[in-house]
Image (cartoon, rainbow over all chains, first blue to last red; front, side):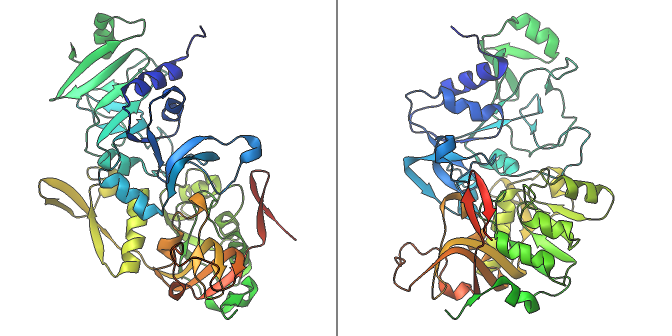
Length: 211
Length: 228
């Protein structure tokens, strides 16, 4: 079997938690990969630029450049798809009609508040739909590798980057383990990488509990 | 057709310091022909309301390069490298808004609503200086509605009355902007006879559309190409 890289491991683990019938919004980056692992579950993919029923990426000869996802890549649609304007699309998002939003993140604090829009040391001139999804989806799962380039964890005591909103996310899926934020505590319910619970605890330096 | 114009005919509508609402997400649903003309018109110093400032060197990118944009209100300018540069040296004012807040502000502007409370962005840097109000235990941020002097929008078809239909995700902000400006100019790929569009498929009724311009762009090889 082909060995999955960190991004694929994260995407596959997230796909495992999606349920039949879920309406799901996938952010750019690792979240986009989740659609590869949904397999035979029927989920409805929403993209905030105005489509419910996103299909796979468009092949070269089927590209219609009007038809793109939120990352501006050409896509296809599923048979039950519908199109709508941006206000309706965000009504769907803020109005709690999206079951799961899967978003990338730069940091997550111990309670599940995230920073996923400002890039370190760069002017902050793009937010897109990130804050609306954080505020409005019924469940928010964030996807990221667990450690920064300098080896420090992205799961932190308090955010050093700009917050994406005070709503706390439900889950942080990394290449090592699945973190769940519940009642002010961090639980790990699934370890699938090569760090043990004790090693994760030591490297993250925050109170963790096993579920 | 009474509302049909060439983009060049519309120059007298544009005045310095106007606020222009410009449709599009990336360049999908962007009125490229109209923006080419706006880049060449005399007037400038515009305040632009648009999700981003063009892409791939097209659309608002050209208006920006022509030195006609003083301020941009939108949700995602990271892709507009030149704009980011201009902002960093104080040559461009930027007002960043979450995409859903931007859309709803325009919707309200066109619907006679003065503003709205949204849960988005509460507790973030984008909420600084804005009113926060708790309603039924949830904290919301007050956002004012947005209206414009001229809306430049893109649709796929207009009938000869000016009714509009859109194509796939090129719809995005366009129908909203059609309701929220004093003057609305729609660029379309195709003009059809009255009666050819089903009343049920019309997204923007003709009363919202003042002028219609035929697009000089076609879709080809994964991008939009200007036909000479």
